[in-house]
Length: 338
Ligand code: PBG
Image (cartoon, rainbow, N blue to C red; front, side, top):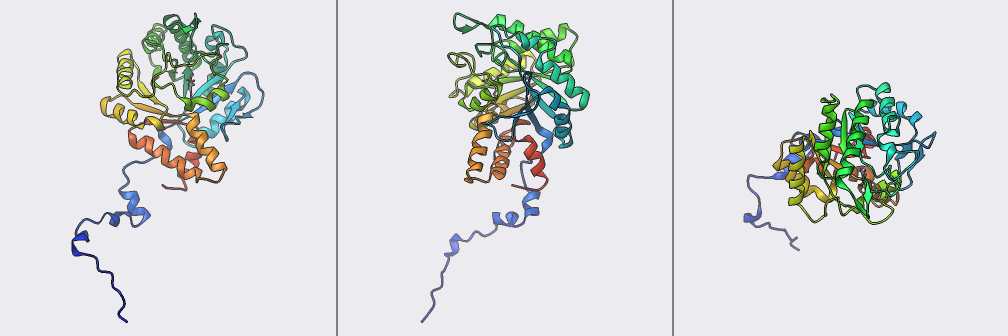
C-alpha cells in the first residue's frame, strides 16, 4: 500500500521571511525583545496605619499588609535591597473628621512615615498620596457641603497636605483627589514655602473605577454615601483623559498618571503618543487581587500572568508602573522571563 504523503502547495510555503527563526531560543528572543521590564521603573505602594503596633495582612490583597510605624525602617531597607527605587505612601489616621484634619497635621501618619523612611534609607524616593478620603469621616476626597465635594475649599487643604509631606521630606507629592486646579494650587503652595525642588506626580486621568475595591478596604476610604463619579473620570471617555493630562502639565505636573492601568491601556498609549512628560500607570488593587485570587485557586500561573500584565503596561507606553507586585517582580525578574 502506498503511504499518503502530505503535499504542501508550493505557493503556501513562505520563501524568505520566516518569523520563527528569531523565536527559536531564549537568547534569540532576548535579543529582539521590544519591551523590557525592570525594577528600576517600579513604585511600591505601602499602607501605614497609625492605630496598630504590628503589621496586619489585608485580606482582599494577599501578600500586602498594613504597616505600623515601627515596621517601616525594616520595610524600607527590604524594598531598597530589591532595587525598587520608590515607595508611594498611604496613611490611615487615628481619627477621621469632616475636614480630614490629620491629613495635614505635622505629626500625621504620613508625615511621620516619611521621616522614618528617609531616616532609614535616605536614597529611597518617597512619594506621598495627597488626598482627603482616608481622613474624612464621610470618605470623600474633599470638603463636603450639601452632599457635594466643594472644589476650591478642598484645594487649600490639599495644598496644606502637600506642603506638610514635603516638609517631612517627601521627594514627590501625588495629588489623587481629582479636584480641578489641584496641581496649580499645590505647585504654588510648595513654591511659596521655598519647596521648589519637590516634584508633583499628578493622578491626571483617574477614572471612577470599580477596580479600587480592595484598596478601599485596605485604606478604609470607601465613601459613606454616594460615589466618586462627580469628580473622577467617566470610564468610557478617552479624549477627556488627554484634556485632563494637558491641563495638569500646564499647571506644572512633573509626572502624569493614568489610573487604573489594565482596562485603560488605550489611554496610556494615547498619552505616550501625545505628551513628552514622564508617564506613570497605576496597576491598582483590583487588578492585583484578581490575579491573586485566580492563582490561589490554581487557575492561572500568577507569577507569569503578573509579568505579562506589567509588560503590557510598559508596552502601552508607561515609563513608571505603580504596582503591588513590585517586590515579587523584583524577586522573580532574576529567575523568570516571559
Ligand atoms: C484616593 C486613592 C484611591 C486609590 C489611590 N488613591 C482610591 C479611590 O480613589 O477611591 C486606589 C488605588 C488602588 O486601588 O490600588 N486617595
